[in-house]
Image (cartoon, rainbow, N blue to C red; front, side, top):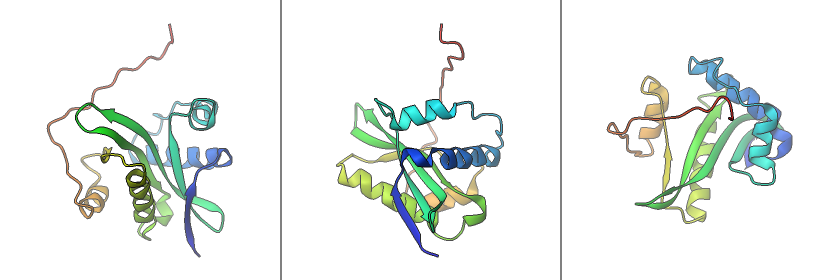
Length: 153
């Protein structure tokens, strides 16, 4: 069983969405994924893609993904934002998340971005300990803020 990381393609979208829904269940928000498969596909592989991703697979079957986009900091310049790092629940603990994250970090370095950013839930101790091994810094000052537009008036 060899694990391989590669750039995601449009053919991977269905499996990627399965993993995203699995993550939502893990994060105790099973109904939070409202994006349609068509919007997801267009946003990643359409005329103006806004995200990129790497998938990790074993024998052609996707068991994990790293989905990212470029953000801009007026203080730091271009940075990679890691939206999701997901490994299928039954495959966790095998080093696949590390390989996906390492691949994503190398991608950001190759692009000469100033760094990477992401979020982790404060109760997700395994993920926090995982990121601590990378000497990631955790910011307790900033508060997440979002605005939702359910009806595009």
